[in-house]
Amino acid sequence: MSSVREEGKDRIIFVTKEDHASPSSAELVEEDPNDPYEERGLILPSGEINWNCPCLGGMASGPCGTEFKDAFSCFHYSKEEVKGSDCLENFRAMQECMQRYPELYPQEDEKEQQQQQSSETKPTSQDSAETSENGWWRWLLSFYKTPASLWPTAP
Image (tube, rainbow, N blue to C red):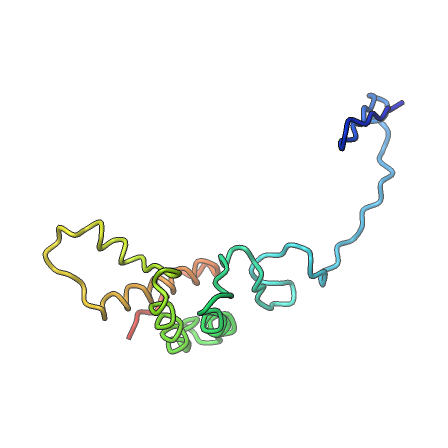
């Protein structure tokens, strides 16, 4: 027979070989797909976006949360042949918002510029915006496993 021992907050259960040999009588509880406390991925079973997914890194909140949600929703629900190609204005608005808060949303190309200060040509702000915007496309498309050949380029 099994035995139980309490050690502080812990409960230790010892079982025998006979306990393991007999089939379990435990009943599994079916998961509720609508349980708001259950951890889910980026896309809920209903097809809606899970704004609480840790994979978003808190992007849905903060000073540019609304712009992020607008852009991400547009991309997610896009029916265009090149997914998200109808969302460029949403992403541009999000990018402009993020550029107003550089301490919260550092630009990848800014980090690269600091590492490559030895180069003679410095990218223009237009180049930086395009690079950053394309970075967002790559990040979003990684969730959808879209081939890189379908990534849109900034206009």
